[in-house]
Amino acid sequence: MLALVLGGWLLTADTSQFTYKLEVAYTMDLMSPLAGASAQPVWLDNVDVTLTLRLTSQTALFFYGLGNQGSAISERVGVAQTLSNIEAPTSWRLYEAFVEHVMGQGHLSLLAGLYDLNSEFDVLPAAELFLNSSFGIGPEFANSRAEGPSIFPVTALGLRIRFAPWWTPNHAGYVQAVVLDGAPGHTHTRTGTYILFGRNDGWLLAAEAGAFVHPKKSELPLSPTLLVSRLREHPYDHKLALGFWYYTARFQWLDTDHAQRGNCGGYLLGEACLYCTATRTLWMFLRVGWAHPRVNRFGAYTGGGLSGQGWLPGRPHDRMGLAVAAAHNSKAYRRLQHQHGAPVRHTEWVLEGTYLFALSAGLSLQLDLQWVLYPDTRPGSVLIGALRLLGHP
Image (cartoon, rainbow, N blue to C red; front, side, top):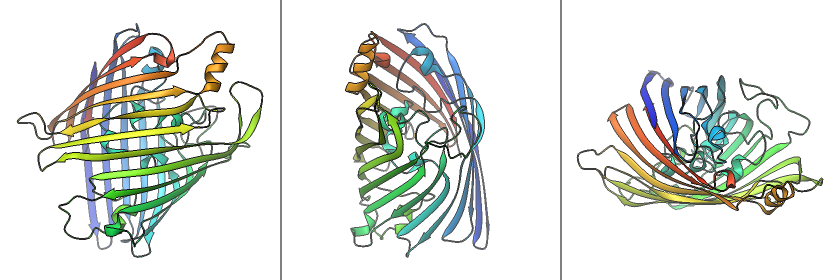
């Protein structure tokens, strides 16, 4: 049970209006079944290299290089919800490359290029501490297509618009929409970077609207640019968001030969800071998601948990959390498995508990336990332990 993170690197420069920032981060996981499975321990790592070129105060270029090595433990153990959010085929790739322009006195942002949908859609920062991928994006959305949507580790070309209405108090609301190639990467390989438009790729359309409550300590009005720009940080104490997605391609029904045009789903998520001081925080988050029950294995998802910082005396930067994720099979998928003589349970449950030791400003060591009940919705359970070492700027 081991997850390791090594030190990151940050380089910035400022020349008149032109600025650039280069960041390097490294994450390493060691994961092993502790009970319920006989798979051997596996090692995997992730390298993130990002370069931000701010051409003017309104326009920026962003490049993101991604490297992954190691083995896929989720498949070996036999679970449906991916155990590590850095689990990916061994490859180096250009992950993101886009231009973003902010206009309308900071209320409107346009972004075009290789784009990670999950960087702004279906995001719960209060859940980012956890290793299981279901706390990063719902499994009903992540598995909505064989290639997945444009998320880690393979992205697609897209155009995103994000708007912060000027009539909301202190810019507390936003609306965003994106159109993306419906099948990112190459259909026959998950390595490298490919920009291909296949015959049945279609388009992925997604929209999300949300509202924030800002920290009470924010005395001055917050710039709307913080809310609309992908490359800015936006502080808040509470968030509520509703999103919908739709594919334009054709999809086969799971339990019959019938095919239909389109695949759709949606999600509702929220997070709130229950206790926030200068030294301690306690966040709660909840998410529910749904997808078309005839073409998606997971017709629904429910999850939530608690995460906090600074609760161990003398360790103000340590973080801890406890969360549960439940991926629910659709009726069509259960019917299909029954037809094949392999009936499945309704839900795979994951209970995750984690503690992150902040060793220094840029180095952390995280201990993690995941108990999976009905792995891959089959009878049984498995306990997985992990150690993560994380180095970041």
